[in-house]
Length: 158
Image 1 (cartoon, rainbow, N blue to C red):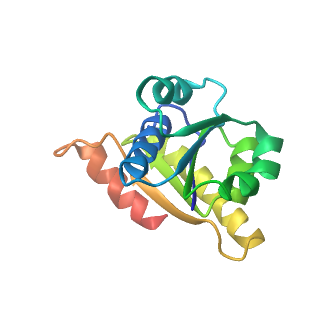
Image 2: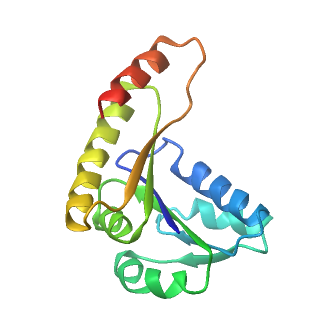
């Protein structure tokens, strides 16, 4: 399974969720490869500090397109942390992933960014006959926050 974490906005939790997903899968004794496709490479630092069982790769756009299938033969799961923005790298991730998670915080800017990512996801699904499966991941919500409630309502429409 290849999981991609993408969104057009930074600061929505892509890297945090990607690292936690990889750690969760590794704790289940899955053979995990983590692809850090974000130029900031924050995930590489985190994984390098806490895990010896997760194989780390740092790939750019072309490498994701050409090497993801090859790497999948060596792993149970691949987790890809994408960069902020709807770049060629984001498109490459969507063209290779089986599932794409779109983290979204409780602000109108986060929701607008997620909407753009959903449109790109739909384009990838047309090209790939329905894949990748996509899920909006509400993040940084406050239990009683008005913005959180409004974001969840708006997300239903996506």
